[in-house]
Amino acid sequence: MCGRYTLALERETLEDRFDAEFAGSFEPRYNVTPGQDVPVITNEEPETIQGFEWGLVPSWADDGSGGMINARAETVDEKPSFREAYERRRCLVPADGFYEWVETDDGKQPYRVTLEDERPFAMAGLWERWEPDEPTTQAGLDAFGGGSEDAGGDDGPLETFTVVTTEPNELVGDLHHRMAVVLEPSAERRWLEGEETGELLEPYPADDMRAYPVSTAVNDPSVDEPSLLEPVES
Image 1 (spheres, rainbow, N blue to C red):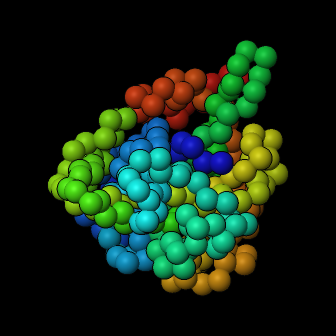
Image 2: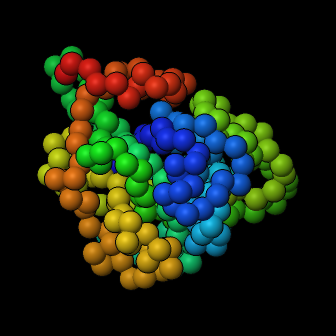
Image 3: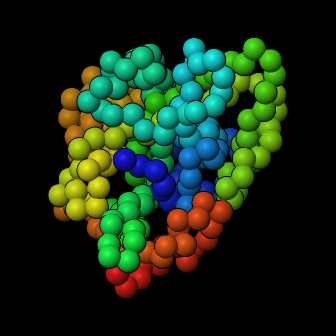
């Protein structure tokens, strides 16, 4: 699965990489956690990087709670929670790494997984817009700055997303039985445009990735600092 990730790059780097502009402020993130507002690029506005809450809430849900952070690639076109989003509302989730945990004799050891040169990539995502019966609040675009607490925003719909997962490659398979779908750059627009998935949702090649152990401080969602990216002895 994908339950934590990083986006530890500067605004300009991300805008250049994804050929899109931020709609609000942004600061590098070292411990992105479910429930936070983080950058996504939707098929509806592919030239804008917006802030959506991680944890998809279907448009037909009774309330805006209990968002789903992952969707399995094998059933994403069948599950009622994801089927309509798969057909109509896809997104890219920018990242430069993600965390996985391995059981050891001393407890769970977190690892950070990146591309070999730590260049940014896009995870395949789905998004939804949930309309409340009564006015509600959602973290605003300026909440990109970090931290684990959701910031208040304008009254309006709740816009959420989920990360699509698939079988792991050989590298990630040593850490977890699932991994985020990391799209090849050439496949990103194809994903947004609603192309039949096929090879788009295959595991990313292991020989272009690396994994290394990091501090258990990442276990605390309130910790969001550069030191989390530093390797430690496992």
